[in-house]
Length: 181
Ligand SMILES: [Fe+2]
Ligand SMILES: [Fe+2]
Image (cartoon, protein in one colour):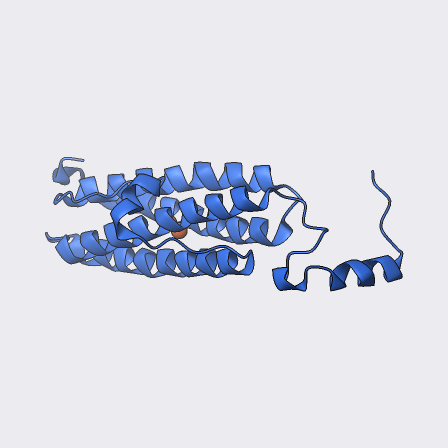
């Protein structure tokens, strides 16, 4: 293991170099352009998830729609918070958050869905959550200790995507078999 740098003079001198980089110091250990790109892919994923949950919220119908739609709306709000955290981190890293709607679905890991059937909606949302869970898990492992702050953002998102997936699984289990599920 590398020695901890205890030479405070050296740390102070380095901190004065490249101050235009803000929080990015010479101690930053990750591939910065790649980290920004990965954050932008996750941002696209979150934005597509917001749109898919909103679509599902407004089009959910049937006698069981109400509690399911309420869950869709809650998830949409949380995916929006995830998008905001990622955009904020991208800016901290000196990058530009990409909100371009033209390329959103191309850059997103998860897919949009406009099913009209309630069970189909829930299944598509569950698949999208599982895509996010798999990709965020990989990102957390890839970042390791080279960018702890970005890793923590992804860890927080990951925990909430797991909650979302669990909520959706619960909804599927509680819907009566009569729905053709
Ligand atoms: Fe999310
Ligand atoms: Fe989610």
